[in-house]
Length: 184
Image (cartoon, rainbow, N blue to C red; front, side, top):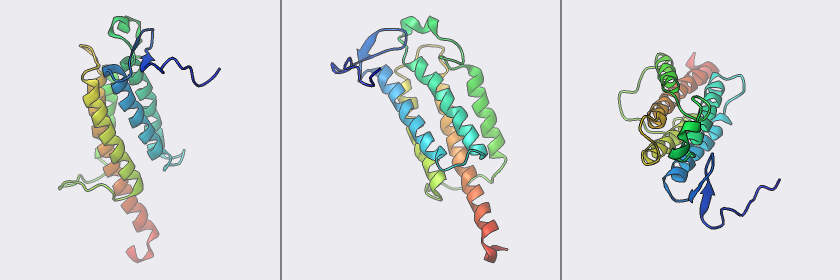
């Protein structure tokens, strides 16, 4: 099997369960933004170790994004073929993000002022991913059908990424203090 098919050379792309649309229409725009967000999450994940709790959280989110992209890559006439949690985002997936936000929020003092990204490489990468997710959320508005949980999922995900970045900033401070002999 070859990576290239040439079928998109005319400016169209194939959808899940069939059909073709122009590459600059709502569905490919939305799932393309989600794909970009997933790539940035992968870049953030590359800064973790496999034993790290953050790595586990990011892997789970990246897998969820495959589900979301499947939903966004499906023509609405074929939505009846989607499977909850496998190719369609569910309300329980949104609720799981809220639970993660609540759990992580208890681990650090929230900032009292606007956050200036860049307190560390990993939190900065999470902030970039957050901004891409916000764009994906805006793009998904034109691509989703009534009753879809894709937009709420993206909305909560951006909140979770903000929370993860602040959590990691706090973790970086703790790591610095434990390594810095002058801090003891």
